[in-house]
Amino acid sequence: MVFTARGCSACETTDEDLHFVLKDCLEPVLMFDTNPSSREIYVDNVLHSIARCLLPHPDVTPDIILEYMTSISWTRQEHLHLLSELDLDYEWACDQHWCACYFSLEVLPKNGFTDLENAGKTIAPLVVKLLRKIWEQLYRGIQRISTSTFPTSNLCLAELLKLREFLQAELARFSGEDADIEGRCNYYDDGEPKDVFRVASNTLDKAIQDSYLVWSVPLALDPRYKLRYIEFSFQRAFGSEETGEYVLEVTTKINKLYAHYTKEYGRITTEDQPDGSNAMMDMDTTSADPWEQAWNNHRRSQDIMDAQVNSCYPETKTELDRYLQDPLALETKDFDILNWWKVHSSEYPMVARMARDALAMPTCSKLSSDQLAQIRSILRRYSKKPFGERYTSSE
Image (cartoon, rainbow, N blue to C red; front, side, top):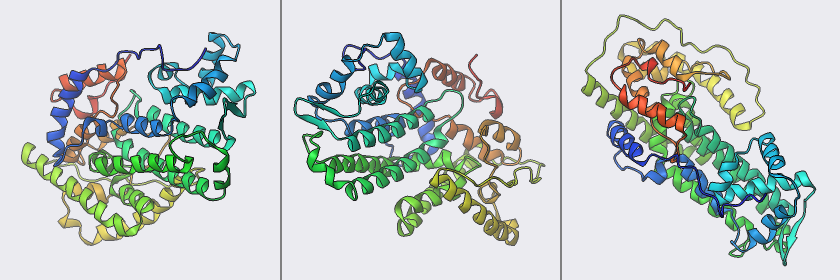
């Protein structure tokens, strides 16, 4: 069995009318001054476009990768079993040519193929290794934001920025100590591998610039991250000089959004006062991921500073100020953002309304049947059910 997009048709899971309804419903509420295109809105489109940047000339891939795949005598069942073990979705190989190539590069080493050379075209082992690493990051990122079991709009900006750091690190390594292999690699007809990887990195940077204001809203409304994670992420990605401008724009956007909600829904009052139930608990800061380790260290020091500021000006804070300045929620493996907002909706009633809408933003251009059912349910019951009951798991 050859993993190729030719001759296969994607499963028909996209509901275009539903996407237009969602965009019409949510974009005015989020007050986008300059609406990005649907291609930029949907993060899976962004990640797919970056992955396609790494594809070689179309004549090269069949000669090298797919011809090796046809030489393997495995049965269809054996291939599907291996894909299952590798957590790879066969339908993606039918729908995306880069997925077909990536899956093949994952499967070939399992059958003893390490050096890929044919018809004078060579994929150097280093390039194979790098392609597998980058495509895996992209594939897993799409998996994470495509899940139908919980909202993912709050994860999109973080995924894009983590991927940027990964690409920058790999590009620097490839252009440095491993640059000597490029003269022996003619995998790309239009340039050297480092130039192709740089194009992919630039494509990602443009996508971040075009959409970071969109995805900053749900990220800031994730109680584990708020504006602190946005500031941390941009400083790590772009340096201190540019971070201030990014954070100012995001802060302005969120404050405008809060003012819009206050005007639209009126002032929500509650006798419930903060009871400390959202206070940050101590956590294990040990992490194998350098990004996560740096964030854990940053948030601990930031909470101490914020606690000192909050104690000085308690009477001047709006509900949004309180939410943003209160300690971050505890990061746990099975953190349930919907349940958190259900529990704390009386503490931050207006911000909870904002979170309800922001977390409903679709992240994928192709939704599963479960996701379509959930979103239809959201639209039907948008104003009929309490916030905590808006999302229901598909049975």
